Length: 468
Image (cartoon, rainbow, N blue to C red; front, top):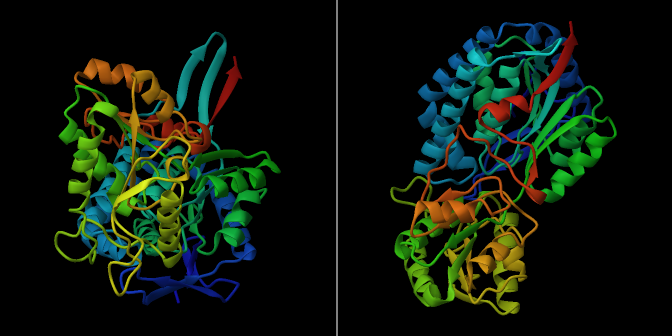
């Protein structure tokens, strides 16, 4: 069994218990990680607090040097780490390399660059000097769907800011976190700056969120779990950053290139087998083009054949666990019970082994249906008709979430005008690509705070005014 990483060393868990890591393609146990305890969290927080005075006073350029060195090693090991993610999480290998590994490398490099140029002494306001200082010890709690990227989105800016970190990776897909810990150890990051305690959320995650020695908790996961983290953190009045669920709308306006918009929308719904908080799981199409959009969507979606993540050309890997597969199947049944038409896909497993579901497309979806309102986290696309632009905006904004979205229109100006009306943290217009340097985060139940870019760094900084 693996160990925990605390105070610059690999140490056994005080609990002596473990969690099986299951390959979702084969359903076989491929590794075991410690099921950490509150005592392990206590040791990690103590190490982080002891390291904070020295690390917070380390020159930003020196902090940047460590991040840059880590990015270099991560890039060198990208193929191996991608294979690890394809094994314990099930992402197709090409996606595991490009989005799950190389994109985090770019994010890490961006924070190495930003740490070296950010104005931590922001300047004067009247007779006051404004300085930005690290918030302190950060508890980072991360999910399984992007098991390296979500860690980098928290650890990189925290370290760049001068904070120290206690990380709890998801116990479902934890192996990329271990690879990162090895890298941070190898580049010589001082002991206690980065600590990792694996284990279950109700034990390790809650111990981190409620610990009085943790100054900030940054959580990515479900909205339900985010509420729990925020409640625990409130007792010690610590800063909380939450990146939570989504039910993002892909709005296709009359005059848009329908075929391109539908093709991109299907891809946006099915990326990472739909296990993406910003997935475009709702497609909104004008009544005049609705039937054609359904036909196109079925055609494009049918090309997403589930397969082995290591097989060439696989576009849909398995879902991460049996529980996740069963959750998606429940929604497929619920959608039909509420009157939507399942025009592609089914509830039977397409394979004898592995946690697979077929790509699914629902037509005849009305606002307010469960499949239109609730995050499913699987390869399920709901297609919803609208009559006017105002109605489209109302439907798009009509869920509790507000994380991402897309707008397609005849002109960029028209798409931008509608994008400005969407209550969501990001919007792509006419196929605009995801930008890992732009702030990412949500409105409403999709969270609090931002990750990535300069705003992502500032989540981990306090502002101080020094009167002169």
